Image 1 (spheres, rainbow, N blue to C red):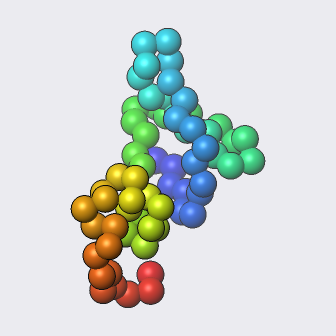
Image 2 (cartoon, rainbow, N blue to C red):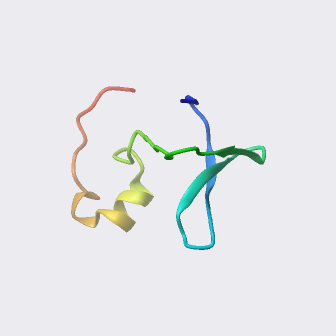
Length: 68
């Protein structure tokens, strides 16, 4: 298994059937999957624009969280 921390993904790569077969990273580096692509992100609780678009019910909520 290949692990990449702090890697900015630009796009998921798919085959003709739509199955995800890899990922395109920033800098145009392709990582091809042998079995699966696992995406883990930190969420968007501190991103007001994304909250407004994807979770408007929380856009005005007070966030109590740590720095990281």
